[in-house]
Every structure is written in C-alpha cells, then in structure tokens.
Image (cartoon, rainbow, N blue to C red; front, side, top):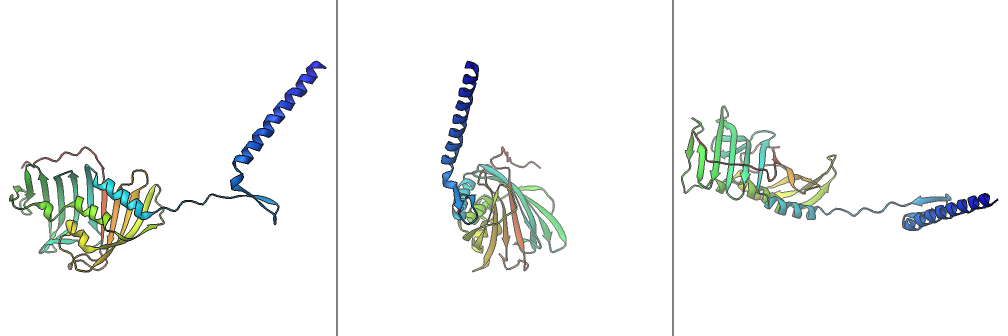
Length: 252
C-alpha cells in the first residue's frame, strides 16, 4: 500500500509539472494566439515583417564599397560598345583595382568596326603604362597624363551608388541578395564611360549581398553617349573584395 501511495504521488507530481509547462508556453505565446468565434478555431497570427528600406541598404553598401582596399571588375555590353576614342569601340573592360592609386586594366574591342584590338593599362605609384594597340609593347604614359582622369572604376562605382534616384527594392529569385532599382543621371558615369549625353537618364539595377552588403552587379540600361546603340545595356560585375592583389610595373 505504501508503494502504491508513493506511485500515486509520483504521477501527481508529473501531472502538475506537465500542466505548468503547457500553461507557461501558452502564456508566453498569448500575443500571437487569437480565438475566432465564427469558426470556433484558435488562430495563430504571424508577426508583421518590418519593411526593408532600400535607401538605407544602398547608403550602407555605398560606404562599404568606398572602404574597399581592392577588388576585380568586368564591364560588358549586350550590343555594341563604348567609344573611348574616335573609331575605337571597347566591348569589354576587365581589371583589378588596389586602393589608393593602382590598377591593371584590359580593354578589348574593335577599331574601324573590323580590326580587333586589346589595350592594357597599368597604373602604380611608379607611373602609368599602356600597351600599343598595334605592337602590344608597353610604353610609359607621359607624366602629365593621368589615366585615372578618364577611367576611374572606383570613382565610377561609388558615383552610381551615391547618386541613384527613385530607389526601390525589387522582388528577386536570388537567395541572400537584395535587388535594388533606380534612375541615374548619365553624367555620373563619366568616370567609367567618358563624355556623356546631356540630360540623359539611365535605368539601373543593382545586386547587393545580404550578408556583407557589398554590391556585386550593376546593370545600366539606356544610351549614355551619342555613339551608343539604341537598347544598349552595360553590365558591371565586381568580385574578389579585399583580396590580396599585387599590381606591378609591366615588364616587356
């Protein structure tokens, strides 16, 4: 009889503990539980998500992009290219940038619509160097000519992010990325493109990584220069953020 009494007491204790746990769980979640008198069902409400502010995302991303020590990039065109010099149309630009004053760039395109050309450009603290389109031999650029004055990817990318207007957060199938759209005055692209059209506006779509808020892709739709083909889209891809990149004086 004593053992039976102890067993009953044990089960009573278990029951009390179980009821306390259930009651405690219900109390902690009562804010999300409601009773629907029409259906006699208990409805669990879903917390309303806090809307993301695309302007805030862009501001934070822009600051992080400005603070980068190094990166690699590529700019391509869906049709045609960018005319940097008379008769010279650049279809693809690839390169590396190391803050504050070093970069190694390769320009690929055509001369006179028929002759394929590739021009290399290297800028270091020692000076600036460019390959001859005809011979491919590296030549030192005159001290008075600074290549960064007509092609500066760091400044160009920063200008896109800080001057974007009508910023909106778009729906995207990309996981762990924000897709942001807006409009940009074409003049803000001069560090990347050169001379631009007056009063021209391009549509911009940016891809920003959720985890580090760095921009990995920019799509620029619309004419920027008088030589652009109708329907032209420029795509800029950025990779290898803050990687160890060494840029040295070229050796023929």
